[in-house]
Length: 276
Image 1 (cartoon, rainbow, N blue to C red):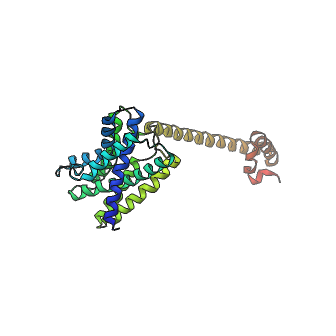
Image 2 (image 1 turned 60 degrees about the horizontal axis):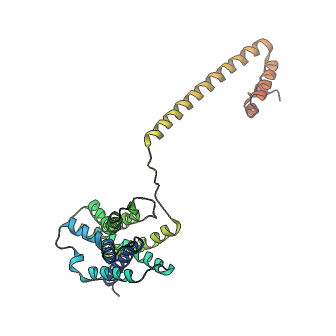
């Protein structure tokens, strides 16, 4: 099978898988057949339709290619008749979903470049193509979109796949970009679901960190200045005591003071005062 046919197959399988995933939510929410069709088709085709409308280059491909609407409708009706709730069914749908993630991210980015857009808008279109269907599905059922946090990494891999595709296509390697994006999303997407990889959900406040850093720096300077002042006073006291009592007596008193004050500093006693 040539690469283009393989990419086409992954694309159609992704449409069917996402339609099954979307319509599975309709089963959980006890929707009727229309609800299955709307959620299934919206999940499968929402991203591609949104991308084509944003590009404004003619009719969305989902309306001109019978495999898209036909596959989405058929999968939604199939999900209405048969619940795909088994362990292997979920695994196969997960695999098809992450394969489609890479394919759609790369396709959206490629279409953006072909339409004359720059790198960043093309990457954005790739992410829209891959994630907008799921986002629309969640919005339609009044649920916080899964890509906003709390779920395994998904949109993050879409960004990486779209960026990868832009780099490859910019250097004239379209097929290599498509293939590598699909493989990357398949591998890391499954690992993210297996180990529940997520981005941090708590936003940072850099002002707190900078204030804390300033406080630590000022405190360290104060401690250093105090230590220097204290050491200077100690040295002056030793010199005056040595002048009065002699070096031997001053050394014995200094060693006694150091060992009782901090045993760890005993090794820092000046050589001429150790008396060893």
